[in-house]
Length: 120
Length: 246
Image 1 (cartoon, rainbow over the protein chains, first blue to last red):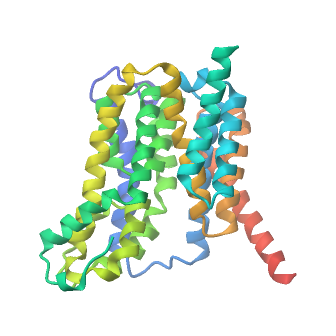
Image 2 (cartoon, rainbow over the protein chains, first blue to last red; image 1 turned 90 degrees about the horizontal axis):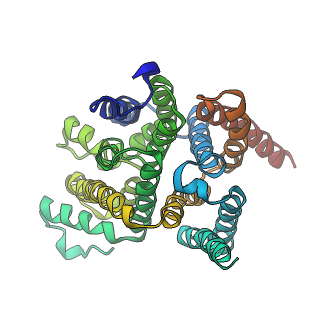
């Protein structure tokens, strides 16, 4: 449990980590939303900035999965992951912003690369 | 989903069941696809299936969960992980704020709303906002609970199942499944961004990660998220300003 990082050395620690690192910092905003429902302006600049930072945080995680993945994702070459995301996004934009089209196109790139690797 | 007028006298249970049937609507099914990917991601991160299911039930918001998983994978300390998750979940507050006046009936108690607010995430929020005008006001908590609680429970079970079934799959299939998540988020966030800053934030946040990974290991998610978000906000405001003067 040194440095308060996630580890499964102690059986209950992962659950405490998930509760304090995930549940608490998420539900506290939901509860604040309930009790302050009449006092917040959703169209304010501060709310817009909060939305933008939240989006960039998720983008950073996406980048982590594309550039520095672990496990089976790491077995797929970096350029294939990058091309897969780009093709998925392009297909999503080209076909009426349908999420499933984007997902299928991205997965097709990974599948084609796997077939090419098998054939070669 | 259609709700005939003649059935306006439906009971709360009836409305909860109609809500529960909403798990077969396209947005709920797409979210379920994303949870297949999330199960793959959990496996990649090296956590157990019990922890994955627990995380799904207690956090529920998918972006918060993938940030938490990212923090676990990167070996980030608990305070830094909680801060990153808190920043990502901040958007829950305006969402809940917007939902409350629609959902609250004359007799709704605050504890009920606090309980139901746990199940608010993007999919349930959009589902409810689109349909509340067809639901009698005193039945809206039942309707929302029927949908959102069912959706959370179903996906919690699914994460546990898929996680375990994936043990039988070849590594390539697991990798492909895990890659569902980044594609899902990139496309859905781009599609639902309300302003230019939101779309820029996706590209800026991604571009900021490699330098942040190199300069501030252990804090790269926070640094790239806050830095990329601020840059996107300033850039978006500047571009909007120029578009207005031209």
